[in-house]
Length: 56
Image (cartoon, rainbow, N blue to C red):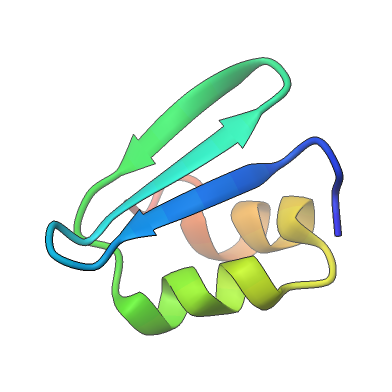
């Protein structure tokens, strides 16, 4: 897991908040299964680039 990347998911609003060393992103309308997969990923940076960046 990338130690510089943390996240939190609000199940009610479906907002995934991601903290990087250089900033914070709030992604709306993220399905719970995607948020769970991101949290469980062994490489959050790769997951971010492949599944989240520019899509939410």
